[in-house]
Image 1 (tube, rainbow, N blue to C red):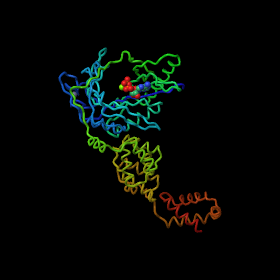
Image 2: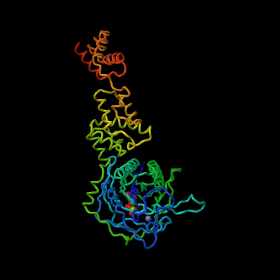
Image 3: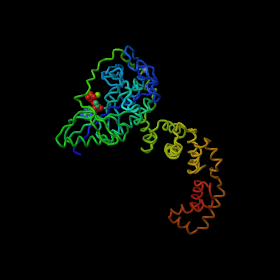
Image 4: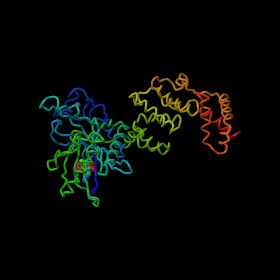
Length: 473
Ligand code: ADP
Ligand code: ZN
Ligand code: MG
C-alpha cells in the first residue's frame, strides 16, 4: 500500500441510568411507541430540564475508566438543528466545557489519546415500517443519556480500531456505565478516516462513516474506504470531506452529506441548566466506588499470577467470571490450575447449558475444593471434570458428588505394593534394562500395575511405590 490510513473515532454510549438525563421518564428499552415521554423530553416549550446526577456520575466513571481528567467544571450547550426525531429542534450537549478531557488508552503497543468525553441527550427514532408510505416519530429514546467519546486520529490499522472498540466496551461494562452492545445500538461507533502518502506527515481529508453496528462492519468499512480513497488519490482526484453511510449488505459506503451542505449548528450555552461542579473529593469517591478495571486485572494475572496471556484475556472478558476466579484464587492460590478448570470444564458446561457464571449454584470455594482433592491425590483429573459437570446438574458439594459416584481413589497402599512387587518379579529382564538406563520403561511398569490394580487406583500412589521399589532394589 502506498498510503497510510489515519483514523479517529467518535463513540456514543448509552448510559445505564434509571431515568433519562433531564426528566424522570424511565431509561429503558422496548415497550410501546411513545410510552416513555413527558412534556420535557418531548420538547414542549416552557419546560425546564434538570440534570440527572446519576448521568454525571456515570460519565465521570467513563472518564476515569479511560484515563481522562474529570473536570471540576463542565457546562451544557444547545446544538441547533431540525429533524423530526428531535422535537425541541436542538440537542442539549456539552461543547465548550466537556466533563472529561485528555484520556489515554493503551492497546497493542500503541497509546490512543482520548480528546474528550461529553454528556448529551439522545434523539428519538423515526419508524418507517408501521404504515405504508408514512414515517412515524417515536420519542421514547429522546433524552436517553449518552456520552460521546472522541479520540485523536491515532489509529493506523483496522486491528487497532477493532481492539480499541472492544477494550472500550469492556471497560464501560466493568464500570457499569453502559452495556456496550454494538448490535443493539447501545454503543455506536463513527469512524473518521483519511489516507496520506507514506512519505508525508500531513493528514489527508477525511470521510466520516456512520452506521457501523459490529466489529466486523467496522473492519469492512475501513477497508472499503482505504480502497476508495486510494483510487481517488491514484487518479489525481481529491477526497471530499463528507459523511458516509456503510451498507452491510453491499460492503460499501455511500455519501450522506458533504461538508458544504453540513449543518451550522450555532452552538450556544444552554440557558436553562446551571454548570456542573464536581469537587476533587467527589471524584475520589467515584474512583473508589469503581471495581478494578480489566486491563489492571490482565496485568495482575499475567505478571503476578504468571498466567498465559490467552488465559488472562479470556478470564477478563466477563467481569463476573473474573470476580469468580479472583474469589477462588484468594482461597487457594493455584492460579493456573484454577484457570484451567474454569476456562476448560466450567466454560464448557456454561456453553452447554446456556448459563452465565452468575446463574450457577456452586461457589468459588467448591472449585477450590475440587482442585485440592486433585492435588492431594484423592481424585483423578478426569474425576475433577466429572464433578464439575455433576455440580452443574445437581448443585451438590464436590465431596458428596465424589462419594456418591465412587470417584475417590482407593488408598490401598498394601495391595498396590504387592501388585508392584509381583509385576517387577515377573519382568526381571525389563527391570534390568530400566536400571541400565532405559528410563522410558517406567511407563511400562506403571501401565502393568494400573491395569492389575483396576479402576480407582491412585496413579500418584502407584508412582511413589514404584519409584521407591525401582531405586531400592
Ligand atoms: P470536527 O471539529 O470537524 O468535528 P474534530 O477535530 O473534532 O473535527 O475531529 C472529529 C474526529 O475526526 C475525531 O475523532 C478525530 O480524531 C478525527 N479526525 C480529525 N482529523 C482527521 C483526519 N485528517 N483523518 C482522520 N480522522 C481525523
Ligand atoms: Zn421525559
Ligand atoms: Mg467534533
